[in-house]
Image (cartoon, rainbow, N blue to C red; front, side):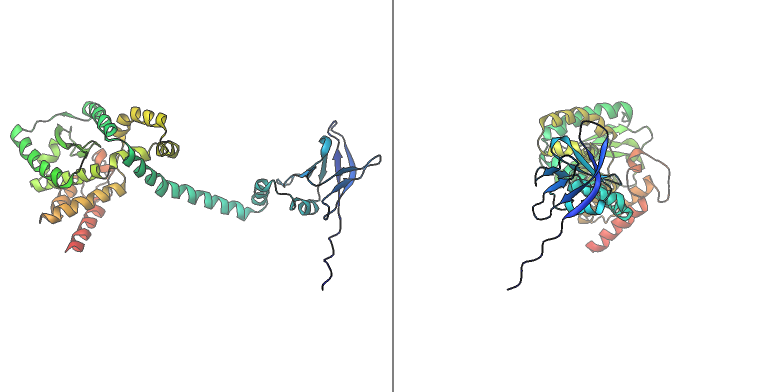
Amino acid sequence: MSPPPTPPPPVTIEGYLFDGSASASELTTAVFDPVSKRIRVRLAEQDVIAESGQYKVQPPLGRLRRKIELPGGRVFESDDREAMDRIGKLQSRGSGLRLVHLFESKMRYVLLALVILFAFVWAVYQFGIPAMAKHVAAKLPYSMSKVASEQTEGIINELMFDPSALDSARQAEITEGFQRVADEMGSEPYEYQLKFRNGRGMQNAFALPSGTIYVTDELVNDAQDDREIFAVMAHEVSHVEMQHGMRSVLQNTGVFVLISLALGDVASVTSLGAALPTALAKSGYSRKFENEADEEAAHYCIERGWTTSPLRDILTRIAPPGDGSDVTNWISSHPDTAKRVEHLLEIERERK
């Protein structure tokens, strides 16, 4: 039978005792007993003794003196960090400040912490916020999307459009084709309707979350084949079906509002409803959303035997590849035209 282990010897620490009533200190020593975990601070008149649980060793913080808080408001301070660490390891509290001390004393840990922080922020921005926005958009009632879209129309009609100059026969012809697209691609509860506007020079088409889709005279007149117009309509219907409009607005509201909405905070829902019209009027789609809508429109075109040529052709005509000019807000929010065209060709090759 092996003998019991020899207990570690007491730890003697030199330092200063403050009695808590004056700023003056007294040079002394403290003795820590590892077995009983008792601390005895030696004084000329009477030693100060603190049992385990009656004192607290403050964790390290930078290069400041380590402290032991004693009963009666007394504080023992020492520059002997190694000895103080031996006592501090027996304390369960203060681990957070020890971590701060570790970061302060080791630059590589500071850099590592910054890398981790930036990686976390990037991950939240890239994945967390979009995921929460998608979840919240799916939970919002359609009535909110409808009211917000109706109010948004007032803003965009005043700021962006004039009445359409297309004759009624041409509008009816395009509307009939659009209705076929909406019937084949759309779903409940969206109420699809097409509206024509003079875009003041903008070759543009975009969708509101309710299912209302705007197309400008300029885009209609620039199309060389009606299939190009309907390919664009398929792209816009895809935005509605995948709730890209609402998700774009929600992603721009910030993570805290999204969390509140996800948890069903009524006040946040009310404030969001009041802000939606302006946010919708200003929001643009991300490249991810544009690629998703392109993919759905490409499949629609291919299934009708058009190939992706109608969508590729009108995209190239509206925003030629390599054209860095800001043609419209719609175009500037989209991915590079050359990349979009190549992506459409890839989808076409895969379908073949």
